[in-house]
Length: 120
Image (cartoon, rainbow, N blue to C red; front, side, top):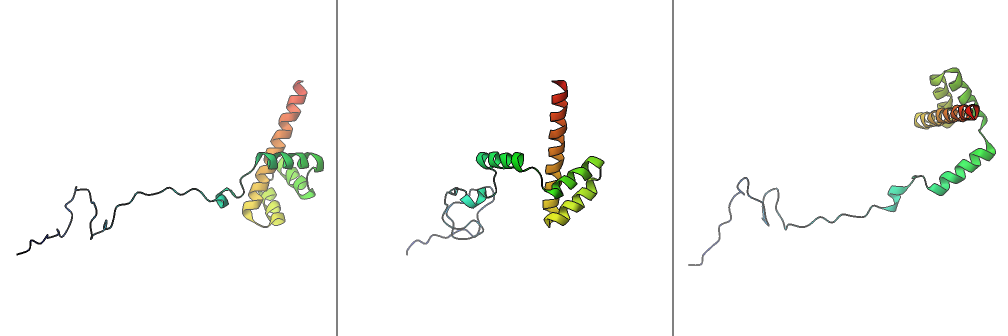
């Protein structure tokens, strides 16, 4: 009579699952290939050149009227009011928070520059 190979009903615990035709780990074992990130993943990342251009434009043009008012509110200490004002002007809470943070950084830079000029 022909000899038949009887497949086990399960893989015993602790044994590495190879090429098995059943169970959770069934199928031919393959090696995972790491895919290169799509260019769309870089969208919105600040470039050195873009940052420089924005900096020059900010220096030449200055601040928009709503940005000046926001800075004034922050100088007085009305952070929440400044956020509400920015949010109203820019449309979303996230954009408002980002703008308020930007204006806080601008005020800090101005104070630092003033202190630097005082010591010189």
